[in-house]
Amino acid sequence: MFVLTNAWSSVIRHKWRSILMLLVAGIMIFGVVFATAVSSANDKAHGEIYQAQAPIAVIRPTAAMENKLKGDDASSVKKYMTFDDYGTYAMSLQQIGVQQPQFSIGISLPMKQAGTTKAIAGKSDVSSKKTGGETTLYSYYDKDGITINPWGSFKIDQGKSLNYQGKDGKNVLVSQAFARKNNLHVGSTLTLGNPMTSDTYKLTVRGIYAYTDPAPAGHGSDAKLAKENRDNAIYAEPSVLTANNLLSDNAEGWLNPRFDVGFKLGSVDQYTAFTQAVKAMKLPKGYQVSSPTLDHYNATIKPLETLNNTMVKVRIGLYAGGGIILLLLVGFALRRRSDEIAMDMIIGVTRARVGWQFSLETLIPTVPGLLIGGIAGALCAKPLGKALAQGIATPAVSACWMAMWYSIAIVAALAVIAFLRPAFAGVPRIFETREAVDSATTGNAKADSATQSAVENANAQTNENADDDHEADAKDREDDGKPSETHDDRKTHDDNASEDDTEAQA
Image (tube, rainbow, N blue to C red; front, side):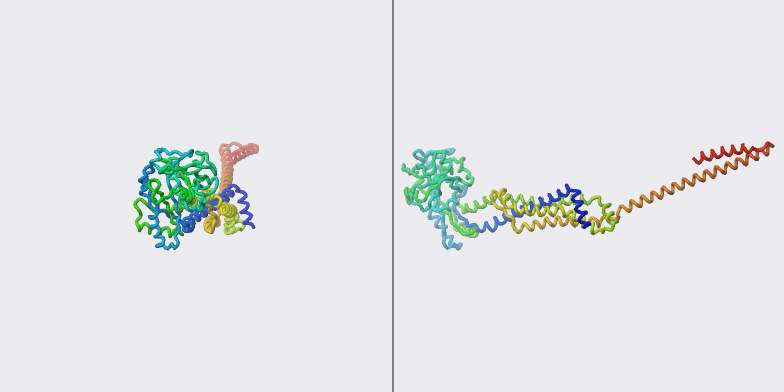
């Protein structure tokens, strides 16, 4: 009880230092718990979750090839991959063990603006006779087609999504920008023209969409041609193409559809095997295999990866910085306490008990800090991760316990250092101080004794000299035949001698 009382009194007496130790310990463990949660979420996102993805692979032109597919040159359609070409590469799916291959098919055609419908202008527009039109009509045969859309994923802002099995032949989706320009609403009618003939088609706005991905270079407001601006893309149900006879086996010019086939795979390993198999079959020059779904996933977890790279440095800094600050505070608390240790030893307190007191002075403020910071870190890890990683949760996991143990080890090491402080206190200085005082007192006493002896010797010598003078005077008078001094003269002489002795003594 003596040890605990003394430790608590010291903590209360130095409350600001104690509060600072509590805060440093709490911040340190809070930060390392959150950093560990972020690291665990990042490892899981790049490992377990990544491997569980069901990617869709596509075969598309490279960036260099895309530049050669000029939007104002109808001969560019000859460089498109045909549906039969895709069928050839689909055979490789059986080689990698895919028993029931599944595909997502997309078709696109340029379309002219007609009637009151106007497209958003490009930076360097030319005649629709060269481009085939100012808009692009896209049609996907299932909802997965939207996930591999080359111009980015989108969501329905107003109205309804497309009915891929519908037979209406009129329903389409338009962008927010296109709808504003043409004052279109859900249920409105727009008119598009055939890229090669004067035929026009009346279509109905089923929904208005908004892109959720950033625009690729050259396909946003920086588009050279109007049809290359993704806001001029009109997404249609498959029946729109068939009902309006926009697909033909003998199509020419811009009526040649551009196919976009997605190969649905069950795992990342299958995607890797498919990529190798297709390359072994020799892709057409200027084409490559990629996975828009994996690219989108990697882009989604990029903020988490960036946050983790930052938190790795923060975690190291928290361990090092927090440990050093706590060490300095403990060292500051233990300095100039040799007299206190000596006094405790005088009254019978052992060094071990003094060491326990110093250890408690370290543990009393830091242990609550560890508890508060650890609990807060575990509770706040998930919402804090969402805020800093753009919606990706980073919940506390079992690995966070290891971070807590490291923080506890730092505090325990400081407690051990505090415990060992009395062991290295050396000889108590309080005894050295007392001996110095006694030596000084003895020296002063000896000096006073010597002074007193000197005074006494001086008095004795003076009295002896006075007696000699009396004897000499008497002898002189006898020799001269003069009468000796009277009794009164002697008395006067003695009185004078006594005064001289008093002055000498003084």
